[in-house]
Structure formats: C-alpha cells, structure tokens
Amino acid sequence: MTDNDRALCATTASLLRAAGGIAALGLAMSGIAIGVLGLTARSLSLTSCMGLGAVAIIGVLERYLALRLRFDAGLFEGLAHGTITSMPALDTALSRIGVRQLPDASRSLADRVLGTRQLLQRHGITVACQAAMLLLALLTQDLQ
Image (cartoon, rainbow, N blue to C red):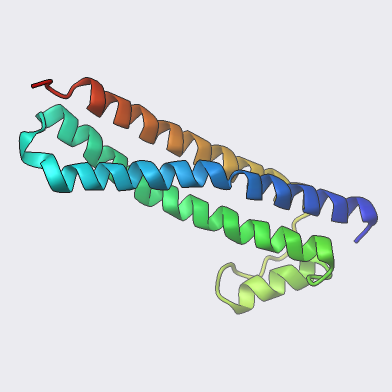
C-alpha cells in the first residue's frame, strides 16, 4: 500500500469514528421510545404509540448499521497502520471469519471507501427517519 492509500484509510477511519455521534443519537432515540412505550403506552394516542414503535423498530436497523460502521472503521484503521497489509489479505481474513465470501477479484480501495460512505449515508438516513417518527409521536400526543 502506498502512503496515499494509508492516508485514505486513516481518513476514512476518522470519518467513521466521527459518525459515532450519529449512532449515539440513534441509540438514545430508541431507548427513549422503548422507555416511553414501556411506562406510558396505555395513556398515549394510537398515533403516538405507532410512531414510538416505529422508532424502536427502525432502531434495530440503526444498530446493525452502526455495528457495520464500527467494524469498517477498525478495518480501515488496520489498513492505515499496516496490521492488515493488503486487500487480498483483508479479503482472506473476512472470508475466514465468515463475514464475506472470498471474491474472484479483489475490490479496489476506492470501491471499498465508496461502499463505506454509502453505508454511512444509509445510517444517517435511518437516524433521520427515527427522528422524524419521534417528532411525529411527540406532535400527535394528546396534551392533558
């Protein structure tokens, strides 16, 4: 790997670590929704219950995406620091732990970074959907 490749890996890992705040927000919204549903579900309107339920259900997808992003951050850190020496070595390791089948041709670093950025965008969209559902639940709550 060249110095530019290592710099790209380190930068990508830093971007993924910075996105941990988004993951924390998603986790917090899921926890709030589950807590409110558990404590006050009987006094909530149907729309509020459905909105909070949607936040909790979307939270399952959010947690999966957050896990994938943390995993990818670790892989990019390994590439940046040289503990993972090449793309074929990475593909072999991923295959050996059962995460991914060994590809016929190794993907380029640029393709991997692009795929990770797309995953990051999907995670952001998921958290935005959670926020929209939480806002809907709050706005439709009957004030007493």
